Image (cartoon, rainbow, N blue to C red):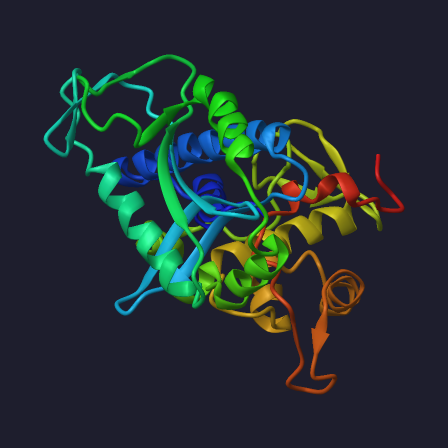
Length: 315
């Protein structure tokens, strides 16, 4: 599933003029997700048979939670990875990554990975070796470690050698699937533990159906089953437009499940309650079939599910 923090900022950016801090946050989330996606796709090609990978895992700690970018479970060891995708040039010096272009120093990534390894060890009650690496997924070598921290980090072009060497040393000690189950049982969902940057801007968000092409709010019904954008002329099935707007509402209001009245207020009066209720029943899981009924919030963007969706009146 798409990272909820990124989805939240994407929806916000389409419905609010972001301030400088929010724009920087969105850019950082996009770069981070690109790096994590690149890592996941590369490692999928390299994993020996029977090894498992978990991504974007959040485990509880005594104070809050720990986010783990990626975790690989082998039959003899658990590998924890902190994935970075820096675009600027940095130099590592005594626990700090200082930018050569004057950007603010970045906190020590090795402290992050050490904390993540400790949290994973605590989550696994039986004795399983756990080790960690910081991984730099940018295409070019933008971090100069000056000979420090050797063996504690990997560049993207070192991943193949790393997994080949680890596979040579592997021996069967435990079932990776059982370890995976133990970790997933303890996982915390995004919406239970995170307050996203940008929440102060949420009340300013435009409501209603936006044009999927130009993001204009100048969308009008031009028939019983279609809507059209008055700015760019894009035609879309009404049902599809309503579904993706509901998904955006669910991302913006990730703390809540979907209830008919607030969803209707967000979608807009061009869609009557009967039509909205029919669409909700068709596309979302309903709970409590009575006056207090609500629909399960998928907390993701429709955009990331669209390949599997087909509507009767698609154009």
